[in-house]
Amino acid sequence: MAAFRFDGEHVLAGIDVDISRLVLTEAGFCSEFVRFPSSSRGLLELENGRVDLLTAASYTDSRAHTVIFQPPIGANECDCFGMKIPAI
Image (cartoon, rainbow, N blue to C red; front, side, top):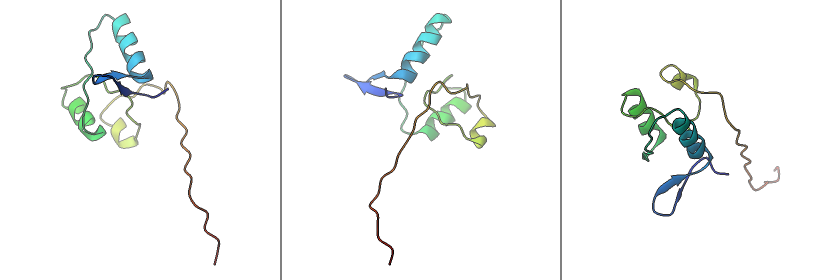
């Protein structure tokens, strides 16, 4: 299942969004999900207090200095494939 995707008329959906909505609703909060052009922009908005939460943000040591990360709720495995070139 994708962390997030656009479903139909620009409606954000996916496991990260579903879990975030559930947790926020159960905690009594309203939520609105906004798409940013890049993760850098999302982090800037978070650091400047214009958003309260980012979904699907990858952990880095430098980001951990300014934002709080929750423990992972899942793991993604990525395989890369390429053409094998014989040794000369």
